[in-house]
Image (cartoon, rainbow, N blue to C red):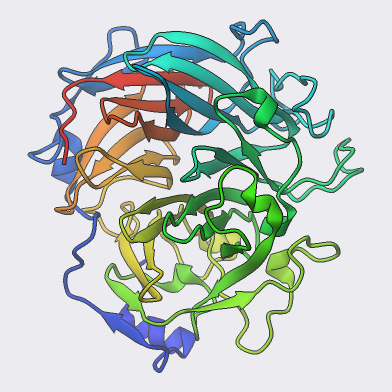
Length: 457
């Protein structure tokens, strides 16, 4: 059910909160079901069934499997870990580049990230990152552990100084689930050299169920999403570093963590109309970033409270704004609304927050997709969006002309003959030259390189 403008104002009491509505949003999203099913003029044509039953792509595109969970790491340190998740690509020498890949491992992971001397935070943490050096066409030259001993490494994001910030999606403290140290932090990983990765958390950036980050390259502000599983839901944060844009290790100097407040709006899930604009939103200091006694989302933010949102996941910087995703909202989970995914944009200079898309048939039958998750910029403009919902799993492209098209479909069936199932996509990213798309399938953990006739903007 879509929340109307009148319902939104009535429920939130936000009539005076500086809300504006636009008839047409000149942003990246929206589209038609027909465009998504066929590719239309916006995309690369319909997806063609893969004879190998692995990955469906448009005509002219091909994939290479770079890595699969359970196979030996090329470093000899153990098997490729399970649950491939967030990822980014960094420039290398010549035609080579470097990938850093998260592994969202909990106790049920078949293959942990091997504990390696010098880069292991907590020996009982099963998550972490692996690093691959590859040629643009998909040849793997090396594959190794980049950081270990962390937990539930979901997503993260690249920095302007070419490091990777990996995020723990947990709030478990030492003594919980066998851990010997507190978890729920961000760690900085060097994609090039292991000896430059320090396995210590960036504590000033907060301890909570982290999902993803995006860095404003102009001033070094780091935006962070929180994927909380129950009410009160997560928050959208910004971290103002004491040494903005200072290079590798600069975030250790500390800074200030703040959370987004939209006056009069307790839950972004109540916003149901694409094009809703909130002017002059506020940022409130987090009382206790380390959450020593109380999780941040439960803390007292004073008069006016704070603004929550369900399933805050993907986060990416593009142009002059940060985009972030709310994957879904369900009333049975305690949310105030039902939707299959929102994508928001925040413009720091204008302090303006805009809802630029609603996903799924539950909100708009003309908008395809369900439960958007990881996102990144596409070389031809617009975004690539990983789907994490029920049924078939896709990577969708979305153009600046607000057209949606399919880019890939996962065909690896992890279900049964009577109940087929497909693992979600994650970690979509492009080579710096825009010629190769890299993407993970979460289960079975698989990393792909996709090449073909990519258009450039």
